[in-house]
Image 1 (cartoon, one colour):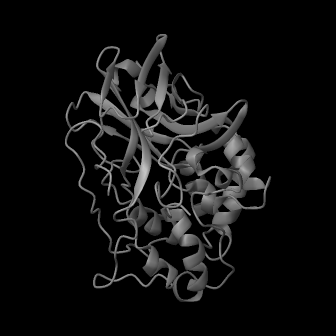
Image 2 (cartoon, rainbow, N blue to C red):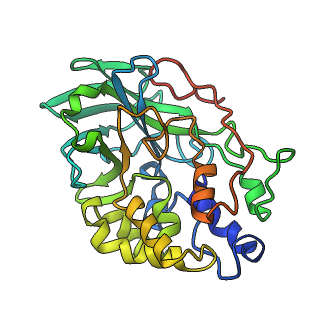
Image 3 (tube, one colour):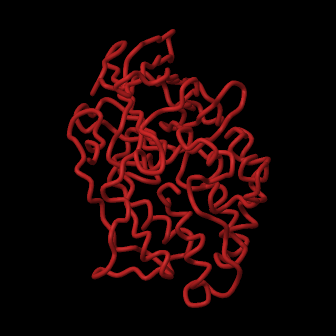
Length: 338
């Protein structure tokens, strides 16, 4: 099971302590990424997290990163799935449809485990690289990396499983020392053109042939706010749908799950939250230095932010801070653990 992203965390744990924390009621659904039965069939195509932030090294650039293949090297191989498309979709005009797309497709691993890949993108970009390259440059000011990295996610999973037993004395990052596969792209922010309301929306997805396998924008929308975890159920349907349809197809589902126990948000609260959370794109204003919900920096504590958001401040922290050593230069994510 991949890193339990916040909404996932709420799922089982809040169910067991609902009466004490959020009121009585059945547990909400969860686990995390594998957020649906389909993505658990090949975790190499499982999108774990999406990050979007200003480059620490070149502030005029924007960094897009996705992690896939949870617990790489332990419960999953340190590989990308050959012939699967790994894509960043970028909406620049606020209609939840992609105006720019960056796509990486990988080949089979060689004898050393490295994979060749092809990157395609705007302005007829076509660039070839391999996963053994620390950083590759393309176009005018572009950079790309694909390979194994230290997992940047941080969360006290053990405390969560013990009924939200979070404390400054006992909480530890369960994901310390674990690796993930990562794709990182850096491009000049100016390459996105004029942004409507100074804001872009970014989502990551994996696709094989004509089948979309997984997608993600903000953390764990599917894992907690979409029901039906059976094969072919609502969670698979959500992952196969597209952001421009989220409001018409999924708003009622999200509102109902926000109103249900243990979250038990009012109708007004649930509708207001649904308006923020859908469509499922990570929104980002490059002129704003704030982090999540404005983009997502590697150091952003999405667990604390979302615990507070979903529980209406009944639970505000798991007492875990980032313990990864991030790089000051591209690709920024920490070097792989042994």
